Length: 262
Image (cartoon, rainbow, N blue to C red):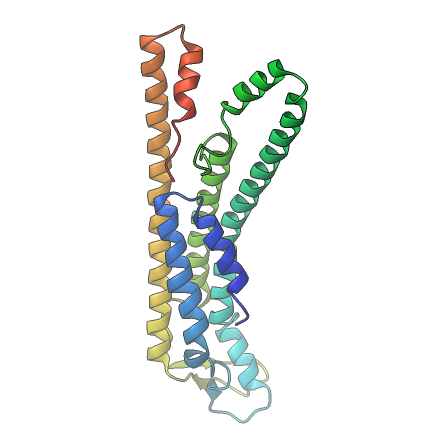
């Protein structure tokens, strides 16, 4: 199954910069997908091909029948699913690290220039008060371009979840039958093929499908949460402009601290 430690550390880092729903999603991904998949699949699916037998001795028939019955191994399919649904989050994490690094470089550059002039130092202070990546406590502000990246992250995770659920249904359904029929060459005629422990494997398939459904549900909740927060920001903006139509600077000052809470 490979080593999941690196992916786990990256997802743990991304969890620090996610919303509450996003943190729950990452917990579900790591515990109920990565850990269980890496711990249980070897015992449940270790005999996936060796336990597939057909009532024929024709050379090559079993391999051909196995290939048409299971175009891709369930385990490899789930590994691909985890990789695909994790990729948008890793891209979001990379965007955070890039912005934080650029902000640190900019601050350092401005400090060097500020040493030459007290007036320049005041300009630096005023600049730092404008929509920084991190707040006073060092936490990342989920707003602006970072918010857009996070929204795209959630949307693509949702699309990948739906895509893999649909793909699993069309590839081999959501249950394993005890017997499959096959008539592909070089089989001499229609042969019956059997898999080992179909009930146990079906239960595992349903469990993984349930986890994927929970993950999809959490993504939909987060999309709603982000949309509701955006509407609340727009309402907040309208209220400020209504009470102070000329106070654009005052509005910007109030909006700096108004961002999605992590």
